[in-house]
Amino acid sequence: MPLEIVRNDITKMKVDAIVNAANESLLGGGGVDGAIHRAAGAGLLAECRTLGGCQTGKAKITDGYDLPAKYVIHTVGPIYNDGKHGEKVLLESCYRESLALAKEHNCETVAFPLISSGVYGYPKDQALKVAIDVISDFLLENEMTVYIVIFDKAAYKISEKLFSDIAEYIDDNYVDEHTDYRRESMRMNALPQAAPHARRKKADVDFLEICDCKAMVAGDDLDAKLRQIDESFSQMLLRKIDEKGMTDAECYKKANIDRKLFSKIRSDIHYKPSKPTALAFAISLELSLAETEDMLRKAGFALSHSNKFDIIIEYFISKGNYNIFEINEALFAFDQSLLGA
Ligand code: ADP
Image 1 (cartoon, rainbow, N blue to C red):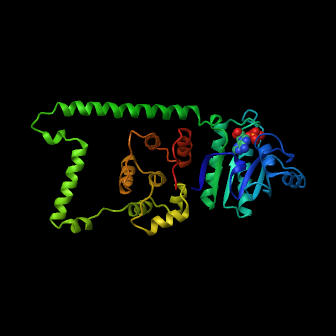
Image 2: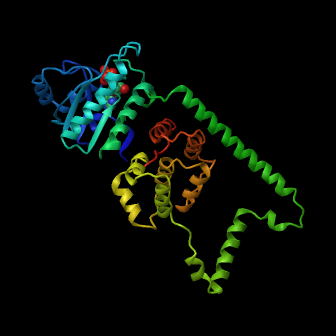
Image 3: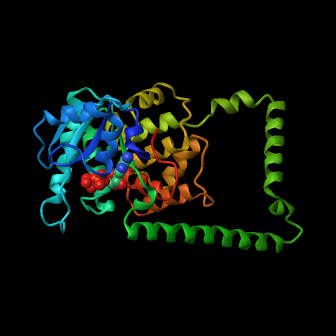
């Protein structure tokens, strides 16, 4: 997945480069900076001494020394005052400059901490939004896998409003589902005996479907039926990309899917994606709920109201919000798997 939010200690990340939220001296400090220097060993500080510091919003690169990462990119985030002193522009610049340096050094995988969101006081939800916005813009033009590393889940939050809206939506839909189920079973029990087929339970229906299938085989009809097989997931995906006037790259990038996986799907009309991959494409194509269901069915899945992951996706589609990174942010906050490959 080109952009992933993960919970980890950044010093443990096995990537080409980790980014350090440093201070202007580049001579080490507290927080993530201290942790990186401790894990990298004295060689890192010695190299940092030769760099002559770094201005806020800029970035410099060193080797990774004892870290699993090959490089450390040191960037200096702004100290948050009240949000009216150019903090956002400076924070955006930290991400942009760091990514540019990573690209210059041919890094394929880079991990960022949430810059400025510790001692420098940038509100975490806003800091995360800046990170996601700049990184996802960069990924539209560049091939790289970027991790946003959240150290402390308790300290992480999406905006209170979004969190409570989604929580409410989940609650409402769980309730609906259960109410419908009760109503449905009352309705079923009230049916007259003359309509026994309407009283069949799910297991009976499955059994009947198997019987129907056997009957079909007995009638040598299977070949004919198989020839009428529906459009596959891959075929529907490619058709929708054309209908929406998108290029392949626009579609897989917006879906947070890497190029290799997309090529596999493109070249194999019977490719069976995972549910998060299928949904990522539905989001990227901005499909309606009905079209999303249709696309999922092609891959053998459905949206269910007994599943938080599905309800969160449904929430975003029903709001017309197709920003996969915002959706992933919310899924992460609710401890769900993320969309994408
Ligand atoms: P700043 O001075 O830029 O605010 P801090 O180091 O104080 O930098 O905090 C930046 C972010 O890094 C905070 O969200 C903090 O929770 C996080 N952090 C601290 N230690 C680690 C670590 N080992 N790995 C990843 N993130 C970390």
